[in-house]
Length: 238
Ligand SMILES: Nc1ncnc2c1ncn2[C@@H]1O[C@H](COP(=O)(O)OP(=O)(O)OP(=O)(O)O)[C@@H](O)[C@H]1O
Ligand SMILES: [Mg+2]
Image (cartoon, rainbow, N blue to C red; front, side):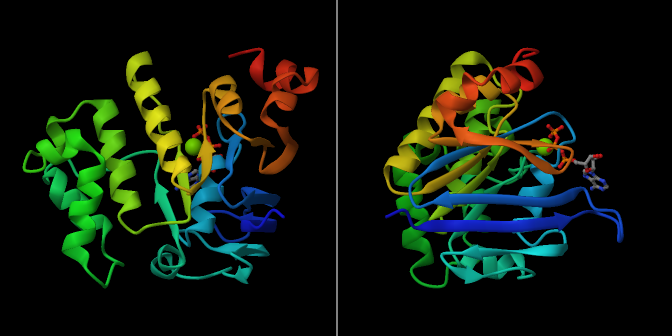
């Protein structure tokens, strides 16, 4: 049976009191699934991830992590519950070394912190070899891999990724998607927000289309790719 790692029911949230950007969003991610969220600019995709991470307040609705309600929980506690987040922008500290970036990601790790950091570096040979270098020296694709590594240091069961392929070369995009797949193969569920809707839906088990802060469509990745309404509204233009 599918076991939900994240379940959102009617989430409303925004940046200014009384002005909701999300108008009641429903979403489920089961263990080990890859689920993508697509939708036009300003649809509220990043806002939804920020609401789950406790970065902005939720004004209505509830969400559950592994069956336990976590609405209005601090970011620290959400991370402790096994959710990791790679934001859309500024997701590494360029002036710090690769190793220091991963150390910062380990803020909620209480036990065997050093060992956990070195185990994380072990999984990414490029990062390990260059661990004393400043993150600012990395290419765009390598920075995204570092951001993924930093998120993984907390051993999450769910990883929220906000447009990890944005602005990257085709080769770097492939590397990032491959890395995300490897992470998923190790049992981590993935919630992927992507501009590249076709790529994302091909890559995912299921997808959600958000529009103006609301659920528009949802389904299996290939169903959405072949749904004429979705193609006309969201894929045709891309
Ligand atoms: N920090 C903020 N303060 C106020 N409004 C914001 C803030 N961030 C985003 N918004 C507004 O919230 C709405 C949804 O933005 P959001 O970033 O969630 O969209 P998105 O679906 O992630 O779009 P994109 O594809 O461009 O990343 C937009 O109208 C945006 O202007
Ligand atoms: Mg966004």
